[in-house]
Length: 317
Image: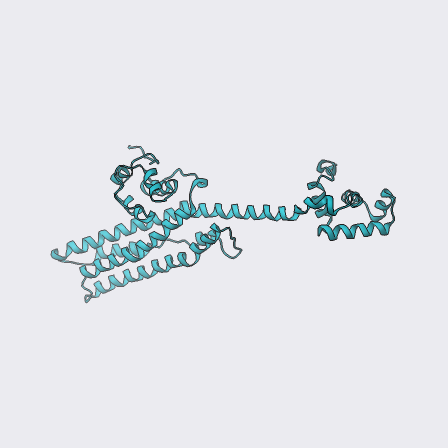
């Protein structure tokens, strides 16, 4: 059994195409023109401003059905551009080409022939609706993520849940043509060509969905998680950021009051501990809350720990 070859950045681009001509479609979608001579994958990608790691992840998945890519090294912009170009190729070239080949090889006046075209037109509407949804909802969402914008109303899992097979009509169409559409010898060559295009389209679409499910969705999910983590970190930093003005805005006596409060003392206990009146304690507490904009015991505890007023290990005892 022949071992699976995983292509690498140092391999020649021409070798990828020799091994699998379907790589040509990937080249076009990535915006890589022909005429690259004997350049390697890395050289060719660099020349065309394409991330080679992302290119190889897609190519290895398309050729071998598996990929060993590191999600942290993939480029979201490169992959998004690839998927958008795939949509353009399929909607503007593949769908019309198959329709044209079918209509020229089938007698539309014949009842069965007309129904065959109806089945294809139904499929074309279905696939356009599916891809238009991605262009209207998914791709703009990913662009916002790349700008650092998050959303509470949409996420990549919403897309993944409804990413059903879009090629069921193609499978049905093949069976109908093969089983029930008679043709004379003269017209059989044209019909065979149309059928071949349908098989090719089915394979292309299956690969496209695999790239979305196996590479794109996990990559965007990881981006979502990173942005949420950054947002949480920023929120915590904003909450604790006032510690920088502690020496100027919080007096030593107010520090003592904060420590006492964190230790769980009541106003009366603080007054006795610091040899001040209860009214003075209350005044200090109001000033602390106003200066720090912190009103809860938990908030003051966090503030005291972050600013070194108390030791977190001492509080656990």
